[in-house]
Amino acid sequence: MINLADEKDLCDLAELFKIFGDSTRVKILFVLLQSEMNVTEISEKLDMTQPAISQQLRLLKASGLVTSRREGKSNFYSLADDHVSSILNIGLEHINEE
Image (cartoon, rainbow, N blue to C red; front, side, top):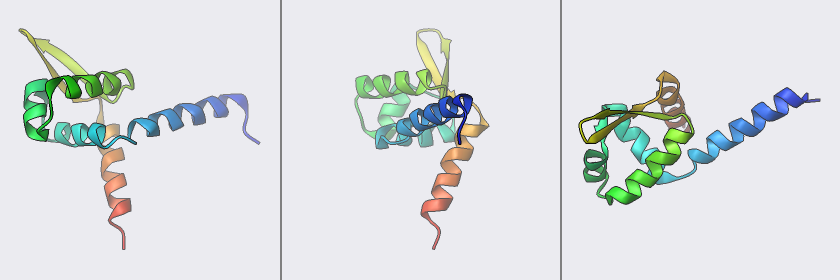
C-alpha cells in the first residue's frame, strides 16, 4: 500500500508527465537541448508565433523544466537541469526500441 507522502509524489509525477503530453512543449524542450535561446529564436526554429511559444514557456517554467535569465530586454531560456535532458533522451530511447 502507498503511504500519503508517496501518493503526493505520484500525483506530482503525473502532473510532470502531463507537461510532456503536449507536442509543442516537447519541441521547445528539444530546441533548448541545443542551446539557450530567446522567444524569437525558438519561434523561428519551430515556425510558430511568439505568443504561442511564450505561453508554453510559462508552463514549462512553472513546472521547473525551464529557467530564464534576463539580458537587456530579452529573456533567454534554457533547460532547468540535466534531469530534463535525461527524461527527453530516455523517452526517445524507449520509443526507438525495436
